[in-house]
Picture 1 (tube, rainbow, N blue to C red):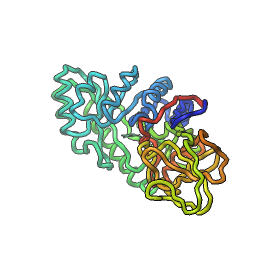
Picture 2 (picture 1 turned 90 degrees about the horizontal axis):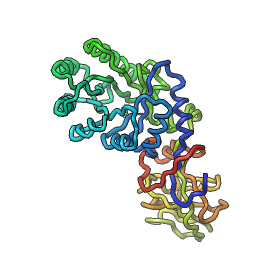
Picture 3 (picture 1 turned 45 degrees about the horizontal axis):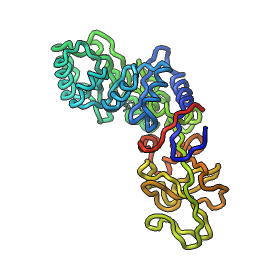
Picture 4 (picture 1 turned 135 degrees about the horizontal axis):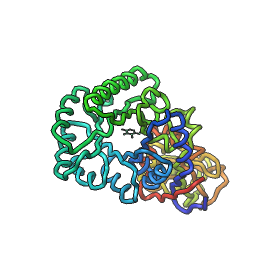
Length: 369
Ligand SMILES: *Cc1c(COP(=O)(O)O)cnc(C)c1O
């Protein structure tokens, strides 16, 4: 990689290829793969990730909102796109962009049928989402009768898939609950498929379920975090490669004396003659304030430099006492050595939150390492 001169997120497409192959290598022959690229490809670059997944032969993509799908279509992405959480106000745009809605309640299903009829659609592909215990979005098992009634009165939509989402597929302590969710989904999908008279695609697994619950594989799996190099399993993470590497530079170095303080509210006080470096990245860029006061560190020339005092909006200061470095030197916030999951832990959060919080103003550079 060329030297960087500002805060930069490197997006490694070879790591994505590797993770895609790794995550899908254990699937049954014929199981389809849906790649989740919501939230800007988990904070990276949704278009670049979608293009690469398309070239890898992914069967489906998923985003959370219609605007995210519109961006992908605008960039020429042709793969079917499932919109996980559409709102009725965007159904017109959704149909115009050939995006496929997840319909999750009576209100949403009715509104979509009305829009599809208004736009004179025939058998528009839709996906029915069932709540099997997450209690977030989804129909209940006892909605199937009502759903069949609605379908009997229209030819504007066709059920492309039935799906559900697991609440705790990464938590071995919740095995019993998860198996119950899987059984509930099985029973709902068997019942509905029977009544429909055709077989929609069935899917319930996210990344952790792919690894922990082969019984939830069904016809398709939805992988998000795993594609980006994180699995929620420390053991398995070593088989994956982080797509995101977040780097910055040293803007200024300060030599401070005992008793001098650093940053807002004097969050750090030097106990001896110390050296600090100011880095142009802050909480507005997605670095949690919770990492301040030594909770988190960055890497400078391979050495750990703890965050000194409070993280500011646009910058943070680190203690570089004893580290051989100079202004302009590269700083690694996370990547393949210190993984985002480890830094997340120091802030009492998870890799997902750290990655997706990366602000738009951070420069993105696509690479193949
Ligand atoms: C975000 C999301 C996923 C992806 O989950 P990962 O844990 O990132 O693999 C899958 N399904 C649904 C419904 C989601 O909202």
